[in-house]
Length: 375
Image (cartoon, rainbow, N blue to C red):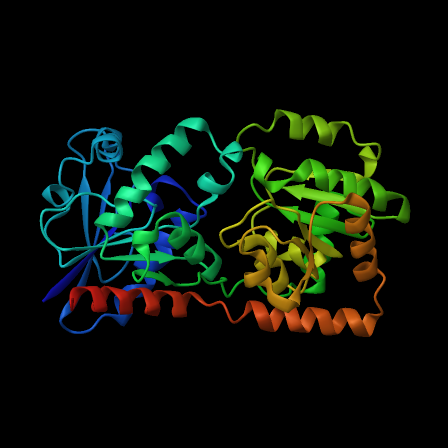
C-alpha cells in the first residue's frame, strides 16, 4: 500500500486562498485513488475545532498534545523536529503552503504559489518577507517536486531559484461549479440588499496595498459623472488605513459602496450584477475573483500584474500601466459596447473560466504524487 500524506493545516487555519486549495485537494482526491493507494491528512488541533473527519475515505491524524503553533514555529524557524514523528510515515508528503517540513523518510512535494514577497516586498509585512525568503529556498531544495499555480509563477520560481529548474510543475486551480450566471431574481435581490440602483463596477478581495484600490478610486471618480457606482467587497488585510481614508475621501460618496461581507450565497449574484469587474492589482500569482466574475458573466477589465494576462487570456480587457484616464476610457469602451458585443464578451468569458476545473487540478496533483513516488 502506498500512502500519501497531505499537510491539512492550511485548511484548518484559513477559509479562503491556500486553505480552500488544500481542502479541495483533500475532499476530491480520495475517489481518484487506486486500490493500492491511501491518503492521510495531518493537522494540529489543540482546541479541537474539527470533531469529525474533514473528508470521506481518508485517514486523519490530529495532533492535540499541546498548541500546534509551537510546532509550526519550530518547523518554520528551525526546520525541526521531523514532521513524520507526528504524522506517521508516508511515501509522499505534500505541503501546500510554501514551506516543506523535515521528514526522516519519504519524498516531498511543496506548493509554492507565487514570488510576490520577492518581487514586491513592500506589499508584505517585513517579518513575513524575512521568513519566506529564508524558508522557501530551503523548501525548494528539500523537495522532490514543486507545484505552482501558473506558468508565470513557474518562470518566477525558476528565475529566482535556478536550482528549481526541472522540478517545477503547474497545476492550475479551478473555479467552483457554483460560479455561474445568477438568476434575474437573485440579481435583483442582491442589488436591493446593497442599495444598488445604478450600473456598477465591482472588485472583490482583501483590502491591502497590493490590490491597488486607491488607484481604482481614481478611476471610479472619472466614471461616476457618467452614472456609474463602485462596489468594493473584502475584509481588511494589512496597511489598510490609507486605503480606507481614500474610500472615505471620494468626491462621490453616494456612489461608492464598501461591502465587508457579502450576504450568504450572494457573491455569485453580485458578480452577475456587475456592469464591469475591475482588478487593478500590482501582482497576482493566479487571481480567483476576476475569473469567478468571468464565470458569472461579468466583463473583466484587468491590469497585467503577475499572472493575470495568462489566467484571463483574451476573455478580458488588459490595460498596461496605471494611468487613470486610460483605465477610465478602457472601462467606458466596454460599458458602452453594444448588447451584441456584451453578450459575445460574456459568453467568451464564461467558456474561458469553465476551462479551469478543480478536477483537473486534483488529477494533475495526484499524477505528481505517483511520479515522485516512482522516483
